[in-house]
Amino acid sequence: MDNVSSPDESYDVGYGYQASPSSVDDQSPTLSGNSFAYCRTSSETSAFSEHTDETSWSETGSPMSSRGMKSPTRAVLSRLGMRQHKTIADDPETVDLELELMKERFSKLLLGEDMSGGGKGVATAVTISNSITNLYASVFGQHQRLEPLHPDKKLMWKREMNCLLSVCDYIVEFVSTSQTLQDGTTIEALTSRPRSDIHINLPALRKLDAMLLEILDSFETTEFWYAEQGSMSNNSTRAGSFRKIVPVQPQPQRKEEKWWLPVVCVPSGGISEKERKHLRHKRDCANQIHKAAMAINSSILAEMEIPESYMASLPKSGKASVGDSIYRHMYSAEKFSPEHLLDSLNISSEHEALELADKVEASMYTWRRKSCMPQAKSSWVMVKDLVSDDRTDKNNVLAERAESLLFCLKQRYPELSQTTLDTSKIHCNRDVGKAILESYSRVLESLAFNVVAWIEDVLFVDKTMKKQEE
Image 1 (spheres, rainbow, N blue to C red):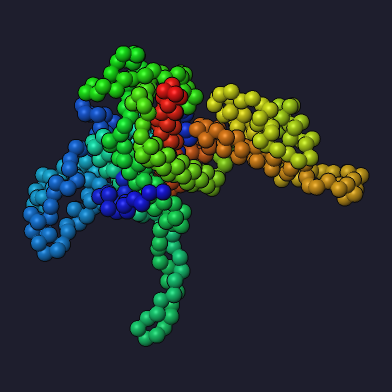
Image 2 (cartoon, rainbow, N blue to C red; image 1 turned 45 degrees about the vertical axis):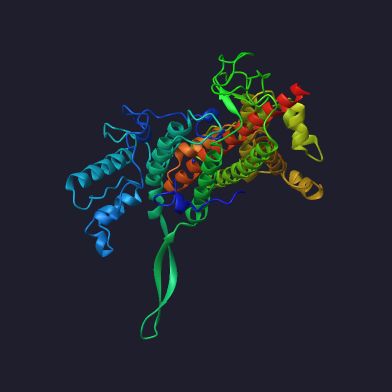
């Protein structure tokens, strides 16, 4: 991957989040109308973001800064990514304005998206998860080209993510440590430290976020450009250029129903080799980022408890869930090959793949539940079990094979939406730390997947253009 600057150098407080994989389908989060991150003003940004230059203030004008000190109010606002001014320590009205903005932001968070205050809001973990999802939709929902993010959108992303992630600074765990007093006595004391999962995963996600933004920034000047669908003709030219726009056949990377996406255009002779190498390098980087974000998201989801409502909805028979043909292949084959089974199914759409994933996952937990249930066996059945060379319990074998089939299915379709179990886990989760890590990794996974797809579009059009020239 590219060497990128430290997030601490790019962001106010060190940082600026899946799907594909998201709590919403098709990489477009299902927006909660009451979610605080999706409120709108007359501008196109969130009500909690203001168009300000992060470097427009200086501490030289503050009497406190001349003594090398910061006011507590300044420190709090800086930590939460709020706007700061030269005279913030001297202007009570400005301080009140920023504090009111901060109060409004966290009041909506604590109310759980229930503005009536009747206690019907969702849990805090779900509210934060929805806020990150909605913020991603607001910032990147209309960004469909391989080009730098608009400065206002980037500022909005940094500021509001800083605020949402600041919650993690106060999620700690207590550990026992030894301390030596001045008289040489050693005592045991409890000290706090960041929770292990947050301490490990959050810095990694911050790094991935910074790398994705840097990849987009690297395409400020390109040899390709975009044209809207319907505006292309054989004789149309780019404004200010003599390069001809050549219509290209429908691309395999782009589904036909996504007619709203802009069309990639390249010069008549194709792009240069230097540009081509740059695109391939960035594609490989984005692909690695996608894999890393997907791995973090999968691990966080695996740690979440399975809701009782999901377990209660499982079918009584795993065979009934997956169907006779798949069950026969999983049960009768001595050497089970999930890849061969997927090839034989001829899955033609993402909807079919998601439906299969739900069925396989449900059957997996059905078989696991059966293997753990105590079963009354007759003495003759017990003797047969002891004498037979059966490798292990049938339900355990089927559960393991279903798990491997589900893994291969997700590897083959990385853009697959979240399964019913994943959605249920997110909705019923009450752990705020896990909610932040899951939603953050999910939106980064979605953004990385989109970047790879955009680069693939450009390379595909370039390859098609070269073949036409030949």
